Amino acid sequence: MTAALLALVASYVVLAVLLLSLNLRSSWRWPVKGGAIAVTASFFVIAFLAIHGLLGWPTEAAPPARFQLHAALIREPAQRGQDPGAIYLWLSPKSAQGEIAGSPRAYALPYSRALHAATARAQAKLQAGQSIDGQAARNPKKPGGLTARTVEVELYDVPATPLPPKIAG
Image (cartoon, rainbow, N blue to C red; front, side, top):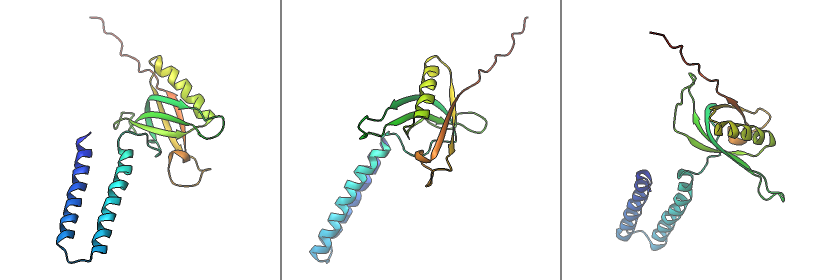
């Protein structure tokens, strides 16, 4: 458990204890007190379910506009249609100058044959030691906010940086 997660849990416990102590001493009627306790308990459940997204699960948000690919996993759709499939990419955002500008994060993208093929090629190159960069651009054909379902991802090789010539001396 991380320190941030422990701090979040501790803050909810403090709020619950504060609410309960105020409820025991207040002159409110018991239905109001019971309702406040039920609302507080329901927020514990909501917070527990919401924390799930903070613990390292892939995000369905749009990937960064420019990124470096570190790893990928392809989950093909089920034949009977229950599982639509997904493509998981572990990416680091890159600045306009081409430098890594943040920590890596896992992204869950909707499955498509084109992205499957591009990701499979990129995986082979990653295993051979080649660096892979990419771009994510908004797809104007798909309505809605900027999510993983409304972006097109392009993966490409990073050109090898030539070494400076050796100086004899």
